[in-house]
Image (cartoon, rainbow, N blue to C red):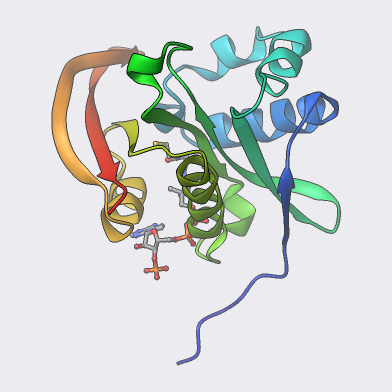
Length: 174
Ligand SMILES: CC(C)(COP(=O)(O)OP(=O)(O)OC[C@H]1O[C@@H](n2cnc3c(N)ncnc32)[C@H](O)[C@@H]1OP(=O)(O)O)[C@@H](O)C(=O)NCCC(=O)NCCS
């Protein structure tokens, strides 16, 4: 059977997208807080200026968004952990999520590829990330894109009464 394809547009996000970014984060967190690493109650306390700041970190930090009919429905971002040359060869992949209404359409794969390409274009060797588990969809996505397991932070987050490990994954530019 032929795979469904979504009509979506990709572009870099900026401070003006903060509100849409917050709305999308709330929708995804309400659906399942574990992948987002915090509860919906905590997410609802996050002020818009903090997202404005996050989305306007100086280049080469970058966040990308997928839009369907003008609505932000997915995102993926890369951030450099340090300004020093000793750490310029690696980035953290963050902010990977897609609205539950638009999943399995290839949006995350396209967004993560875009973020990785952006990092590689600036000479980055490694893209690192953490997945709070269980999260089979995300782990499968990353494995299929060449990320390898490289460690685990036990009991990384606590949602309600349950602790969730954080799996560390890393992808090397070949
Ligand atoms: C994980 C997530 C980002 C995937 O987004 P998506 O747009 O649905 O993913 P894609 O359609 O691009 O799928 C790419 C690949 O990921 C894997 N995948 C995605 N969803 C899956 C699922 N429900 N079950 C199994 N594999 C899945 C598959 O390998 C898929 O490739 P295929 O469709 O060719 O089999 C999405 O489910 C999500 O937003 N989840 C909540 C937030 C989250 O987990 N973010 C990651 C934090 S580290």
